[in-house]
Length: 166
Ligand SMILES: [Zn+2]
Image 1: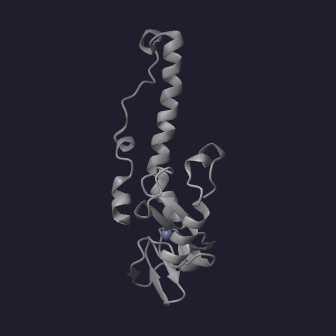
Image 2 (image 1 turned 30 degrees about the vertical axis):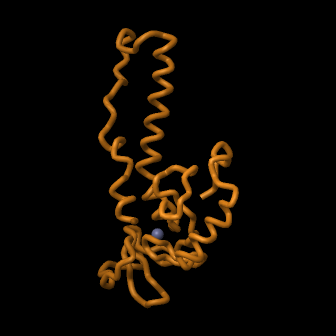
Image 3 (image 1 turned 135 degrees about the horizontal axis):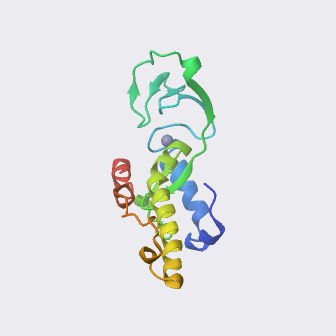
């Protein structure tokens, strides 16, 4: 995943070497969550199951062997090139301890970051509206109904998924 320009200074100076070590030395060039191999096109069903060409078996989104799909794979399946990225399990790019890094394929990376991205989007929108509060007075006086309590899904931060990676 490309590094945003405003975040580049949060990464350690040896990030390229660290990322390479995690992806290709420690993880051996395969996703540490689902096992998809880096740099190869993988045939997968859209629910995460994929064909492991090396071991000649189907695996699920957690990398476990599953039985052969019964549905029509030609209709359900698709080819995707796999690109491993080095992910921060705690979503903090300034903390690059090895146990907080994982080599993840795009799918696992998006699943891992999804709750955090949603939380940040909600928080940014909330901050922007709160700024309006400062200049135009409290929203309830203006009759704005947009103020909603923080959704529970924004509070968990996807900790269940990070725990499953460890
Ligand atoms: Zn993966």
